Length: 310
Image (cartoon, one colour):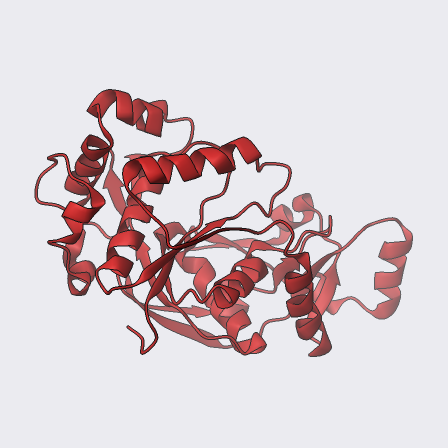
């Protein structure tokens, strides 16, 4: 994958307990990195201070340890890294690429056009505001978010699971947020800064984040940062087109441990139904590693988008 030693990551958000989908993505990340003699970073993505809870941050670490999903570096936290994010934001601003956006959620919902079921395309409403119009909106008390001005160009990546993927930034995304109106730096910016700072060069995550990857790659180019290798794995879904969530209590980790009795039972079942193993027999991550070949990743999953939980 790279001349540098492979370094993957676990990057959970501490907004609830883990479920089967989280475990599956983490298991693949661990297997792909470890099969190449690599390392794993644990990063707690607590950028959203209102939803993130320290108790969940502690719990997710215990859950990983219990399942045998070990990490080599961390845990790192996003809270307290505002200076690093601000430095990146200032670098983008110095290039003349950032502008204030006064649009409300209602404005965005009314004006944006959904693209391929992924997410709305920002129509550039505030990009075209004059300095006078911006001053008027600011004087009216509207606190702006900050958007990155994107070019009309294609960004291409070769994903280890999904294959070739291309996105036109202007037509299929639009100018995207790099700082919210409450002053919080946006996920897209934070994750790019963190991956580079922590030496992450392998990103394994759910396919729902595939459409965000070109924006992150564009930010990496603007900030002079390297591109990781990406692998977007299928989502584990409760039913067709509805991903597992924290409301699916039967797939929550505590329920899984009650159902399958041991951590090995949980890992083995998830590996079996997703195609990581030929059976659902109990297994540790270390045991799965013995028969795992990262080169087989593109053909491992029958459906590269969704796997039905059972």
